[in-house]
Image (cartoon, rainbow, N blue to C red; front, side, top):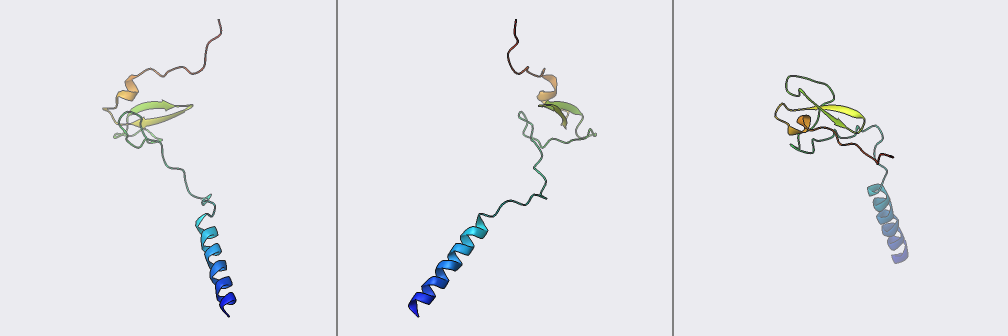
Length: 82
């Protein structure tokens, strides 16, 4: 009898451990990027609250009017061959 109870408890613990490590939901949207300077969540569309264009990678996002990120020139990546 004790072996059955131990086996049941062990399998229950295994089930709980596997359920906790389940793969994340693929239908969930990725969180929006944040501005590296002012830490505001960036918008994908320009609006009255987010008028400053900020390029991150190949995408353009919009940040607040006071953001210094929009005044900076984007840094070039990679090395140029001469």
